[in-house]
Image 1 (cartoon, rainbow, N blue to C red):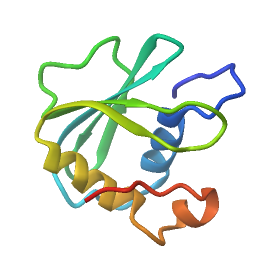
Image 2 (cartoon, rainbow, N blue to C red):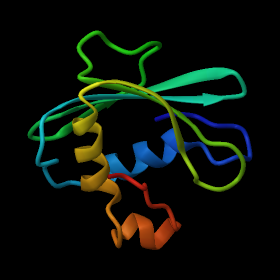
Image 3 (cartoon, one colour):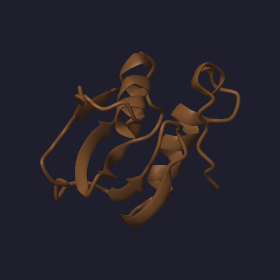
Length: 117
């Protein structure tokens, strides 16, 4: 799990917690790598989706990743901004719809909802 000693909300911690907490199969396949830029440093989160989600925190994006997305979230509220994306962006949107759709328990519990297309 991603460790944070700061008071600001760490976006990847929320993503990690939500994906790990869901016992159901993802319903899609592929590798998603997210990078959170915080205080000039990038922290990486990577998940391989298939029959289950296999998650790790690499030092850099794996070459096998189907999509790599750079995100920035500042302050104490979850309001992520996409600053860069490469690869299969549709896969990223599938992940968002699966885990952060409007009205999901995550949205209700945290007030956090991605504004994906």
